[in-house]
Amino acid sequence: MSKLFKMVILGAPGSGKGTISSRILRDFGLKHLSSGDILRSQVLKKTDVGQMAEKYMKSGKLVPDETMVKLISSELAGMNTSAWLLDGFPRTRAQAEALSQHEKLDLVLSLEVPDEVIIERIKGRWTHLTSGRIYHTEFNPPKEPGKDDLTGEPLVQREDDKAESVRRRLELYAANTGPLKALYQELGILENFHGTESNEIWPRVHKYLQGFIPAKGGPF
Ligand code: ATP
Ligand code: MG
Image 1 (cartoon, rainbow, N blue to C red):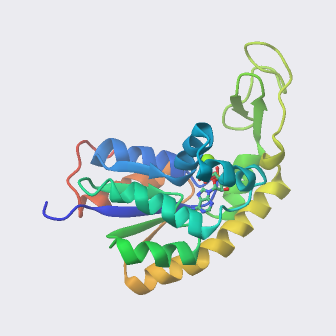
Image 2: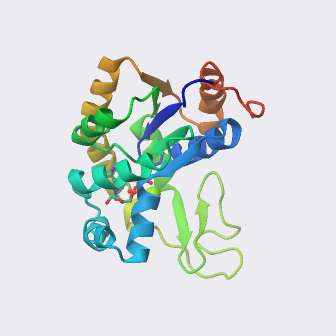
């Protein structure tokens, strides 16, 4: 392949972005760049960027565009020998415009899962806080309702998994992502994948990507 493939994945919290991303990496051998992971490593290393970003991350706010653009551009500059998948960046129209000055994207893939499906999925989620084990009242219920299978300790519903919090995050996502998608639509590189489950969306994503990059494995 003459040119290295560069793509961005968009998807609301709970849309299955993590699942689809990991399958893309597995089957197409792209390098993965996650803005959340990069930020968390800056926080751990206590860099200047990490220390300033931490305040925003803790309160669930977006880190300022200027900081994000600098951080991600420098990561990308060191990756000009491999194809990549960018995840979590850009998050705002300003970030997208800045990115487009340095990098020409081949594809922006957007997972379009209805809000109501996401809310139903997340609101049934219960967590065992000390181990991080996650259950779902419908898809993966604990043996005894409200109790962890291994310890018998009570399960809790995380504050941000409650329906109202999820709804708020989805609204924020839509407000930030709308202008981004409009830009990529104009550029003719946006591809929407509608569906309700990763297993149903994935074969279509796989097939579509095969038109751009040779796959290493099968669709499942
Ligand atoms: P998701 O459920 O999609 O993973 P998240 O809120 O956990 O959502 P991460 O991508 O893990 O998102 O990022 C964690 C935090 O880092 C965000 O809440 C935000 O404060 C900050 N962050 C990550 N990417 C960006 C970005 N592109 N612009 C601004 N802030 C960002
Ligand atoms: Mg995350």
